[in-house]
Amino acid sequence: MHALSAPPTTANPLMTRQLASTNHRVTSPSRLIVRCNAAFTRSGAVGTSRSDWLSTCAVISSQQHNLPSFSVNGRPSLDLVPISTTASPNTSADNDGNNAVKTAASTVFTKSNLPKPLSSDLSPPPMHGSTLRVAYQGVPGAYSEAAAGKAYPGCEAIPCDQFEVAFQAVELWIADRAVLPVENSLGGSIHRNYDLLLRHRLHIVGEVQLPVHHCLLGLPGVRKEFLTRVISHPQALAQCEHTLTELGLNVTREAVDDTAGAAEYVAVNGLRDTAAIASARAAKLYGLQVLADGIQDDSGNVTRFVMLAREPIIPRTDRPFKTSIVFATHDNMEGKGTSSLFKVLSAFAFRNISLTKIESRPHRNRPIRLVDDANVGTAKHFEYMFYVDFEASLAESRAQNALAEVQEFTSFLRVLGSYPMDMAPWSPSNSDDQ
Image (cartoon, rainbow, N blue to C red; front, side):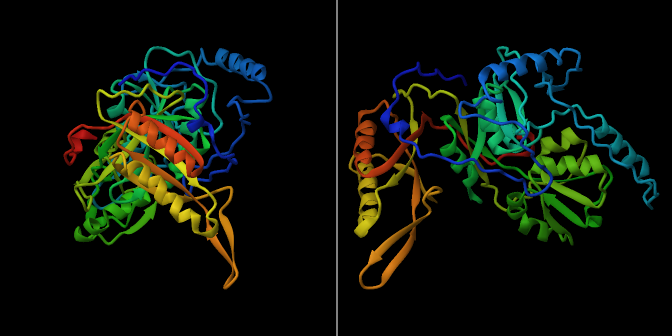
């Protein structure tokens, strides 16, 4: 789906009152370790000036012509280095004679042509063709990759090892769009991405909902009765906890960065006592077999993803639209905070605008508020930012009037995007979908 980009206009006061943000180093909990070697300026360039960055781009680009090219799903990759991790084969024979199977599985992944995820040490953008490049967090086979393909069929999916790297890839023109998860029907909101939406200047231009279908994956020939460990993303482990117990598996659960990364780890290292919870597509990519299919505890497991771009789209009224905003109410002195939030919500209620989401997040720059009370002394309270989604297009006068009224009761207001709603009929997925 290609959306029209709005032409450059004067800044909208509703979209420009933004809090100053600070840069935070993100350290992945397990396998992925990112070391930031490039300095990003406020304009998004690398180095001390744009001329330095352009010179570096020219030098690095000239060195790429003699490198072998790799592809993902038949499409060229973004000049990324293939996975070269060598699994040391276990030469000890087992009772089932599975040595040959294990060695073969290890051999497959020593020469994998799957792209390595982008890190925060971003390379310069290559020559851009007509194929839409979409960044996502994870490795090939991740659910985010499936969401990117559903949102933009035929796109070139670019894996990134962190959520923030996906934001930076779009800002630096390495990718045209990013598709990132914001909430799951079982696990709730992905707070990290809500915080990044506030820190970066990308715009939400669409949404897509993806049913999640988990599978238990192992090396070929492995029997699940002999498993001692299951690895996956923490949410995937939680979403399959009861099913794993019902299968009678006496296994330990260990969390890793993502589901497809768990499948890759099992395949590359030839772990015959370990299974991964991931998608059926991950099994095909990494040469694993499906030991158990559809092991999620709830068949209604859906993740909502948003599509991000450098420019907003033009709001329309010919189809259902959703608008996402973030705001902070005035200082809650003398109880005004509660009334301010009530007045903000009333601005939508009076105009029959339905809210689909409201969530609070602590104010990063001003987390604690002191309130003097003559009777009980000084009280300390959290300051909050509020994220709201409502069903209306900014092209509608009622939405414009509502935001104008909201602005009167807020100290900060930003429109994250006004975009078409995902109206595709939903049904529980099967393994063929992913």
